[in-house]
Image (tube, rainbow, N blue to C red; front, side, top):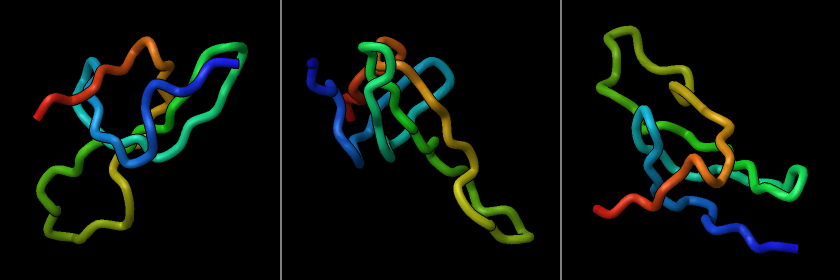
Length: 66
């Protein structure tokens, strides 16, 4: 069994933006990550929750170097 390359709360980048790892699980010998994208400015009507969460495979993610 392989170990995940990324961990929870780690800042990562991918095609389309950056985000933070929320969770991950092993699926058919590949790690799948739930990534919460960074939030933009708060709209005038307020915010209900996360703007966007994505499921990405490990190969689609890179460590953010900030």
